Length: 405
View 1 (cartoon, helix red, strand yellow):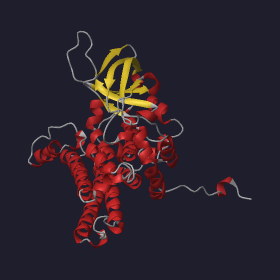
View 2: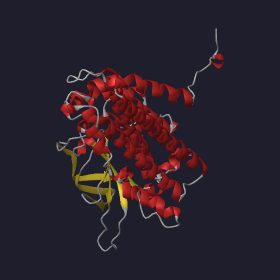
View 3: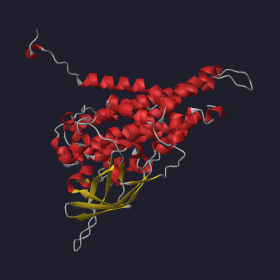
View 4: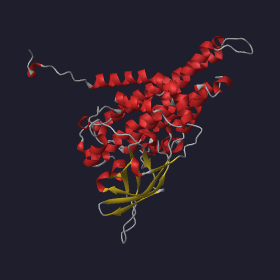
């Protein structure tokens, strides 16, 4: 009979957890792809997909071990999303941000973190930045939120909403531009059904109204500090993952799904080249040299984009381990991710351009890939001018002149 001291407790290593999560993402991918058309028609992601992602542990990837998470890294998040998101861009986008939002909740005070993470180690909900549309007014014990915000990705499955906005100066106080994050229970807001789009239809990113909601002080945090990389809640954790500026981390949430779509489009084009027979000429595409060349070029390009994304994610962790990020490191992440996003969009356009008219029938994934990635790549993170100018400025000794890095 074994005594308690003789009993060996098996604990997964970080590498074992990482491998398990990526394997689970690959296993889930066919079911996600099979639901894609129904998700798009419903303008929401299926409850089954969200439940399966939660059960797999994806939302805990960047959560500290003290909170019940895995305390892994951005490369793991990217690999999981690229693996599962090749059949449905909306799912890749929403799950990717749910992973990153669980990193962002850590900027909040201890009590709020306990409410979010609880015993299961994660929360679910959108994060919004709405300084022009939502007002925050200081009152005794907290703040009053009023207004309406857009782009609430994930609101259909939300438990919490985290919204960032300006705090109005108190009477007699000098005008200022202080920004705070406010955590609001889903039950306290009004959701307006506004998500009628040509791309990313299933994200259900509706408008959210805040009808004079009271938010206690402990559910708020200094957004300016988070943007600078000094979020108050992060100071409770020693790991380098929690010493990174907000936008430098969050951009990976928007980049990985685009690589997933590009890989999905190349795979779809591959199937077309291998099996298509022209109904007009009776010729096989597999014998068409230009199609083979285009397929090979697309394969090389998507592999380069994918590996560069992982490289950026690895380097971010390495840089954060060494100390505070330098201005060049901060803007390099954004410029690099913007390149990956643009390249992913161009890859999809490249293969769609010769995929044939039948690829644009509503039951074909290629037309959805094209619509989804066109919308994703237009996110403000990825504007090709504003994303690269800060890096060029820093390289010649100027200030980056941006808060988005």
